[in-house]
Image (cartoon, rainbow, N blue to C red; front, side, top):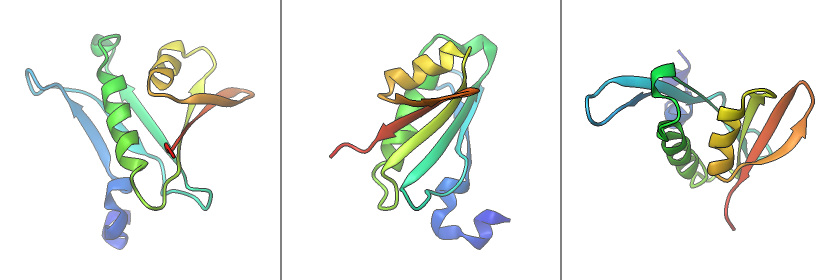
Length: 115
């Protein structure tokens, strides 16, 4: 298990369930896909149940995870990949301050640590 071998970075290896406060229902999940690389980039991934979309849950969770990651010594950027047609996910990233920096078959987004 990766977490057991790298306990110091267990939060980067953790798969987070998103639980709605009002009724304690799991509505989605989020994770960091790997440890920050040499450039200080870490990729975030997330998913939300269809019944819970367009309510701000993913924006709240993404912002919280990015705020945490960007306070870590080894992280300067959070990056994310979206499908070109996935406007809902792109809007989540835009609301969280991400900027599009590359587009080919998919879109790549980057959030930089505030200086």
